[in-house]
Length: 126
Image (cartoon, rainbow, N blue to C red):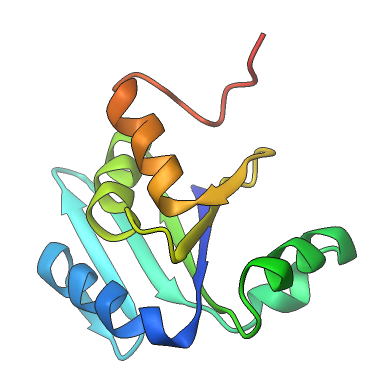
């Protein structure tokens, strides 16, 4: 599975989780599952992400949000992740890190997704 990291300030959390509730089945207090045929994607709040960030990444996160709340989106197909991110992260107060060299506001990321339905952020630009 591939992963995307999403973070936001605490005041964004309730809206983000309400959007998740409307899209996916809650599978615990802080996790959701989205089924599409044989495939499943998972979203979960994960406080340990901060411990996995390198110093430069952490500095970037803390420059965007002072006390971030992290979620991991684990997926098999980019189309399913795209559906999740368009539904829950199209917001300037939400940030996305693709784990493939791109980190930006959710609203900017969603604009890229809408502009190019075939865009796969995992493929390096040539």
